[in-house]
Length: 406
Ligand SMILES: NC(=O)c1ccc[n+]([C@@H]2O[C@H](COP(=O)([O-])OP(=O)(O)OC[C@H]3O[C@@H](n4cnc5c(N)ncnc54)[C@H](O)[C@@H]3O)[C@@H](O)[C@H]2O)c1
Image (tube, rainbow, N blue to C red; front, side):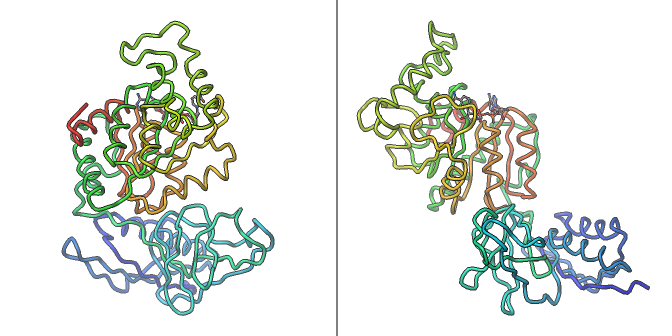
């Protein structure tokens, strides 16, 4: 008979989300055994199912490892012990058995009750600040700060697949270029409209391909109409947007004719030079040097933005943040309380943002390459929609639906 046993409970849409199958399969695959103590099946869309089970194994270490993996699937100890916090041995260093966070909603059992972790993000640690659990990056740990260790006092809520979801149900975690892009654009437009009406925050992450594909005027018009509350990008988006505003080209290609212009390859460098001369993008707008485009509308509307540097950058523009830690912090500030993030044609920046977002924040990823979408859609979240299409085409379609223009 297996001598070691632990009781777990779990609740949510366990059956139709596939969670129950994953939980039970995991136990069997790991070579442990289980007994379902009770199972209450939710009957309506609102009702959640409730599971209580005993997991058994003759191997204590196996059971310990399995318990941590069950926690990641949304199971938690029926009678959790008080969470264990150990002091960080040094600045930026956690105790060896620190709990590494996921992007799912997380609670920790502290002083006899479950408390929600604030500032949830993946690949962080949980520290106690004024008695409350908070997510922090390893690098931000101070020596002696209490760091959560082990996972036996942790409860995760992986986002339930909402049986009622309209937008985020229609292509949940699916990637298909065959699906109608028009249909996707229409549904996303409805979602953006309702977020704007409800006072929510829409943040865009955009790569230079938005400009190369002729999507800049559409994105600029969405900013002007109040559809953007934050913009995250690299140096290139701003460089090519300014190039387009000043010279009508993107990487030297005339955007109206699609033909390369004579000496056009100089244009993005001329754009950087003009902004450097003005002092900044904001100064260029103020001085009347920059009078159209995405960055112009963003600055004019006072929309917060952050340009994160990369090793590929020319210039960079004065506002491009080349200290990566500062750039990550600037991104995180703009992403706080975001209702939906629109990711447009940047593998680097979209995936970086995907890693910063809690799993309950909606994200729409538009890219021509299915693998980029798959990587983002695979956030273990029903909240990510992927659209495999051209960024310019998507933005023109979106502006047409929302603003009646193209
Ligand atoms: N001159 C410069 O300073 C310069 C130039 C280029 C890039 N960069 C920097 O390099 C970094 C990475 O650049 P990135 O984000 O462009 O590259 P990336 O490779 O990370 O992403 C480009 C994405 O665009 C997608 N894509 C290509 N064509 C598309 C289309 N028609 N419609 C939709 N998606 C399409 C690709 O599949 C890819 O996922 C950024 O920080 C950027 O600012 C700087």
